[in-house]
Image (cartoon, rainbow, N blue to C red):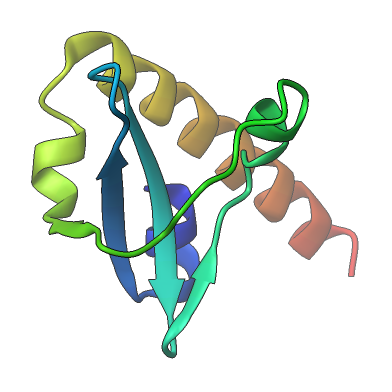
Length: 87
């Protein structure tokens, strides 16, 4: 959701055969997956297509996810504001 805030684009998800899901971003027709390394550790291949586009609002439905997003957003805003003051 933070990537979407900063760079726009869309949020997508794929489903794994075991029922798990994975989310990533698409910006200017390119996929950006900042957490793909969690799969390479276990030699799990990720097929980004087919996928499902997800509204950002859907991503925040889980209270734990929304809480972590809000913490990350607040911390990022703090860092950006501090850096702007130092310019």
